[in-house]
Length: 109
Image (cartoon, rainbow, N blue to C red; front, side, top):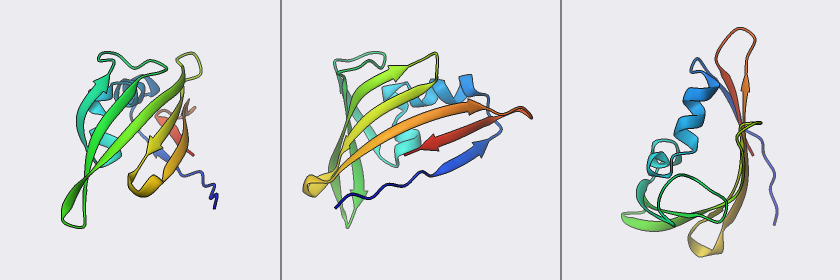
């Protein structure tokens, strides 16, 4: 079954500030509701990289892997494949757009 949704949120933070958080693998836990474990290869985000997290639920810890598929700093967009327990996969496309009145529109689908 395929489900397609496009949540969006507005923040007062600048696009550059948000970009720093969503492109730093060690900071993924700040927005992914999970704890950062490691990156393979380590270092700055790049296509082909896998970021390993641990999420808590139902009284235990669950492994979560985020594969970085593509990154476009000019357009401030990321393509990620999130692998969750029980074979669930989320294909996520994150985009950041500066708002004329300030802040950032963050789209996550």
